[in-house]
Length: 74
Image (cartoon, rainbow, N blue to C red):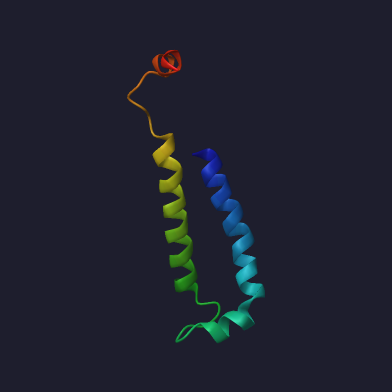
């Protein structure tokens, strides 16, 4: 999970300045929103972070099988 959340943090750290840099292009693509609408950006960051955290948690969740038993089986 730590690696997944680190990737999310890196993505947000790189993505937010990219939004600011591309605001002219974004303003022509968004309807009824400004290019730097803080609510839309916050919702997008939250949704992407939640989906990424869920995608990282599902494979990392505790297993009901003892790891030694699983390794011995293979």
